[in-house]
Image (cartoon, rainbow, N blue to C red; front, side, top):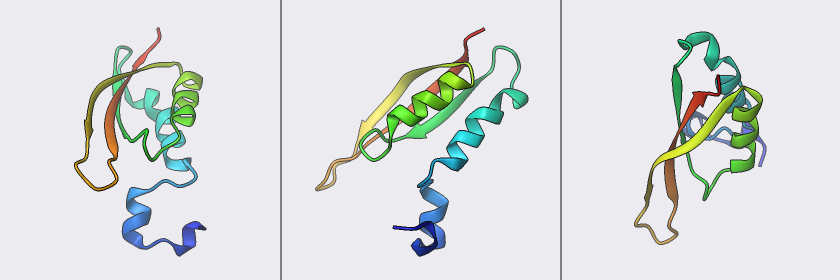
Length: 88
């Protein structure tokens, strides 16, 4: 489904082409102190974790899972929060 077919609400929640996610990670370092970190809400059930890992690796961050919870819905969805810390 093309992005233009999504409602404004869907567009505010889903980054279908991962453009905003990639930009956020690439530009994060300019807003962080040397030992700063970013927190990334993600779902490995719905998202492409390999892309998230690629973006953080390319930006010089180590990615680690710090929290996760699974929904109690008919089709369970796992939501996670990841922390990306500078590799320096």
